[in-house]
Image (cartoon, rainbow, N blue to C red):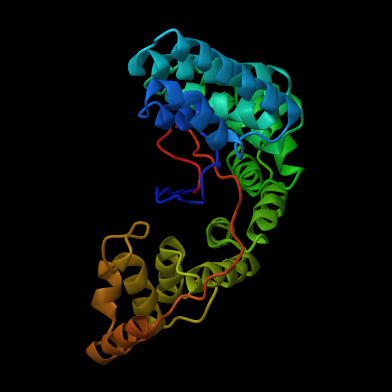
Length: 336
């Protein structure tokens, strides 16, 4: 099954809204541009909104105490910056160990990518991710499935990936629902099951986000049953109407071939033009077969319809969309 991935992802579809691992350090580092003796007072004022729970307040006070002692001892600006980073990381590690799943996921993401002050460590990333997943956090379950799928910090294991995708999907995580559909349709970590694939793709599509709608439509377009092909057009149109360029291009192909819908070269040219304009899959130009078949007047009408098109975007957006890491031996990537 063809899959695509484009990274505005604010995308997408969108990525996990993770706070950088040294959030507090960043706040404190801003204060380090002030005279050393003013660092603790300014930092105290700046960090009030960043720490809410009692444990966070205690951690903040520990950091400020360390900075105060260092400042009074005559520490330089660079020394205070290094101390802020070290103390913030230590504090966040302590909070994560105490069960803060948000921080566990922050650490997992940051260890996976690496930061200037935090060397990349996939084993640590996997360890923190597993802690969040085992607590029942659906985002942690999703990320752990991705780690197993891609072999990040652990041997690639598609069966384990499937199990964690299932756990997350059963909590309503839309990205996991799509991945479960992919697993069932492609036999990745589980026996191929078209019925289950339909079920999970549909659950994701019901979120109202255009990309799952496109994926559900694309899956149905590959089936031989005319009812599935008609369903494909319905869902491709839902996504296309929201401006999903991949769906637009494939919808145009359906109109061109009369697959799941009555053949209509004008509509085919409209939708393929819209998809090609935005770089949709396959996404460079209107198909040569359509150009050979369509007449000049039909082409002009299709172009006029394309120019008049305005997307009707849904207010529904998929939450918590981390980027899927590449799977060894595959070029596919997780939808936005």
